[in-house]
Length: 332
Image (tube, rainbow, N blue to C red):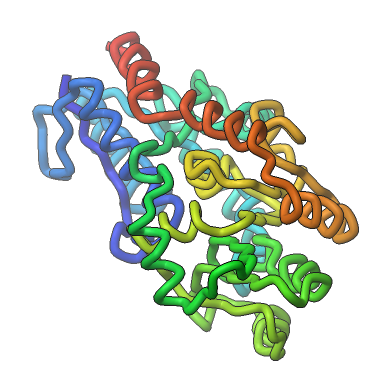
């Protein structure tokens, strides 16, 4: 079976979690034994597998339908997580929702990463059959590695014994940067590092102002990737991700795979698969974040970290590839 894997705007989105999820899907398709092509002019494929939602993707779907091909869309974008992303996103979010409904309804089937996103699809009144399929995580890539960890600590001048809390994501308000900063103020002896970026034109004036204030123990490092990011995820003392809305949170999967102590906001995307005090700690308010972060910094949490890794194993690429293989075969 041959799959045409389509990702519109790959260069523009190359630094996003969406791109990492796409590369994971490409990897697991190959693990499943499928022939994968990216050639948009190809005619000998069986299924068009779409991962982005622009007008060119819609044109690809129309072309595939006309040729009698099956179309599967990985539905991981919704009005709910679109809002609060960049300047103007809230003003156009209702139109974006209308477009997504039309877009997703054009598929023969939908994959979506969590029970929460499946409930959104059902709430939108979208009709194609929908299957929960995790974005997956490349376990070997994120296992703790001393060379990667030492490189991260050396490049950023982290001293022995210095506690470090990290987060990863674009500079969007919905990512919870405000809470990250406010919590950091309660831990002046801990270094807080936000690893990410966003084009300046997309960052809200309010967030720009807040990020520009000098706080001794908070820094915004800019974008990092590869070994450096992987070293950061495993060598930090805690991964703190206060995002307000996610579809799955691929960076959370990566932190779990790094055997890291994880603190997240208690949001529907993590229910029921990511359990509070089993795989991670969850909070809803600044006070809860402070209390739970203090606990994580003071305790090794060995059992929780092992549970986190076991959870990541269930979403490893080999495991997800078998699920995807079974689903793709059933469509033909």
